[in-house]
Image 1 (cartoon, helix red, strand yellow):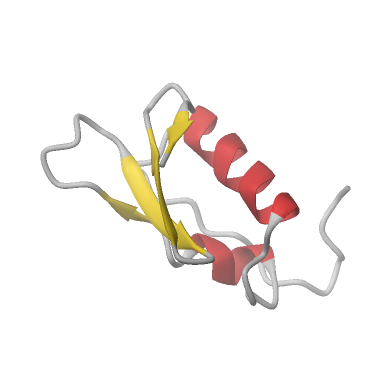
Image 2: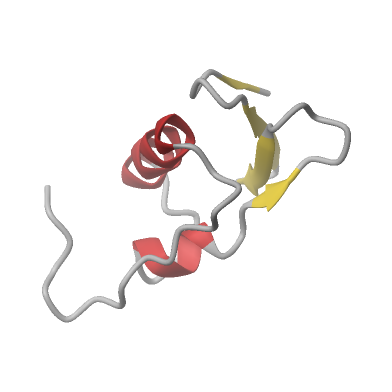
Length: 74
């Protein structure tokens, strides 16, 4: 489902892969976790230090690690 036209633009950091973006978007669609829009949800993602390019975020009290290939694990 496309974002509403009045929603803010999602800013994708250069350190995030396209596969990670898709995985995070899917996670947002399943559980927005109180974020008013997808742009806000993406601001909560951060790189994992010494994670080999993995990123992470916490949703409903569960930490998700997302590998560069898009694989998600908790």
